[in-house]
Image (cartoon, rainbow, N blue to C red; front, side, top):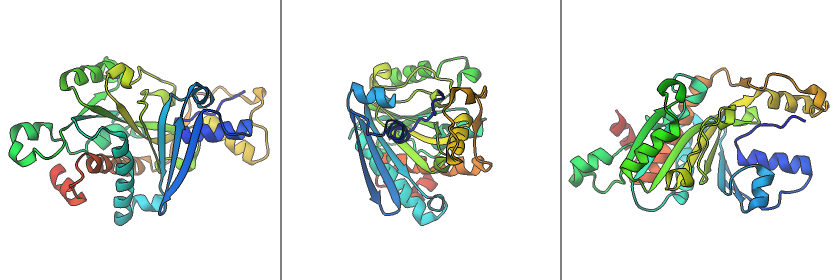
Length: 296
């Protein structure tokens, strides 16, 4: 039987409920709206929840935006603020923060992390050199560890080395994800206090980045940019009234992923929202105009 692939806890909960015709034990789901923004919170409470959703115990927050909101300037600010508020609730109140941009900047669907870090206002060096001007801003630094094929070094090894030197209070790890639904691509943002496994969504899982491996809280921010082809095909067959879960229907294209044709523009917008949200969460006094001035 083919198993649909997704990195989103919300979708894992939906799939479980759909297949088992009941809510999973050990999982608490709450939903609210911030105007046109939909916010879903999935809490994996115990071992039963971990087994049902195949997600580590912790909190997962999913924000869903309409495509129009990501292009309209006023709505863009609302999206960034909503994401920043959820991020702030997961971060420790004080201490330096290390932002890690995961992924391959040369591969567009995997470039969310590197592009988002370009939008982050880093202050660690400014606070050290000009404490009178920047001493009130939260100390923030960033790193782009690249990918194993380009560096020859595991991402987790590079991040562990940086954490050991910088000694941050928390790590924010930004990465691209895989969804089961094409409608959620580049319009759904997931935050999790459980850390992240780089490459997990595209069958290339590396060492995890979490509190156990790094020794500090790791908040993951992810945006789905691809859909597994078999998952997409199975959903389309079911919509057509065909049972896609029969074993004989399995195909040998498990490494094929689908992405939108305008993925470059969508990834750029999603990365900018994440970067702005990180800035608002870490430097709440900054405006969008301030950020543009810092980054120009």
